[in-house]
Length: 236
Image 1 (cartoon, rainbow, N blue to C red):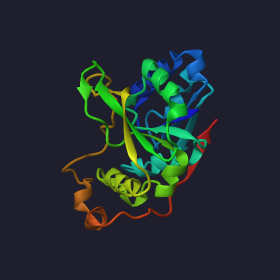
Image 2: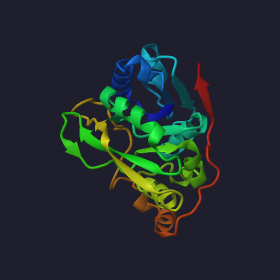
Image 3: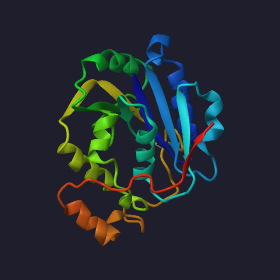
Image 4: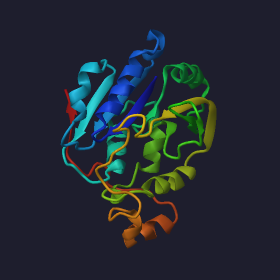
C-alpha cells in the first residue's frame, strides 16, 4: 500500500487531472494506492469542489487559514494524517501515470523501508527532465524521524525544502528509481498546475529577505519543532 500526498492551492484543473488518471489505474493496482489531498486554505476554488470525481481512497483535508507559502505546513498535515507505510510525497504538478503506478506497485515489496527513493521525471509531452528535488517515496516514519518540514519557513518561498533534505540525509540513504517517472505539468499544459497567487524568487516573499531563515539555511541540519501550527479539518 502507498499513499500519494499532495498539497493543493487553487489547482482545480490539476487536481481533476490527477483524479482522471487515478480512475484509470487497473483495479488490482488501485487497491494498493490511496491519496491525501491537503487544501492549503484556498479561498476561491477549494479542493472540496472536486470531490465528486474522487474515489473513496482519496481523502480531503483543509487548512482553515490562508497562510502564504505554507508548503511546509501542508506537507506536515498530509504526512500527519497519512497511514503508516509507504508514501509518495510530491507537488500537485507532478502526476503518477497509470503505467508508472504499475511499475511502482511491483517494486514496493522489494524496497528497503530504511531508505528513501527518488523517482525519475519527464515533461507532460514525454521529454526527459531531471529528478524533482522535492519528491520522495518514503516511509511515513522516516518523515517524522526528520521532524517533518520546518514551519518557520511558512510565509516564505523557497529553500525550506533544502533544509528538509539536509536533515533527511542524516537519517536515511537516498536511492534513485530510474524506471518510475513522475510526469511534470507546466502552466502551458494546465493553467493552474502551480500557484500564481504569491510571488516567488526576488519577490517580497523570497526567503533570502529573511535574515533568520538565511542563518538557518546555512546552519548544520536540525530537527524542526512544533508542526501543525494552524487549525485544520477533515472534509467529509
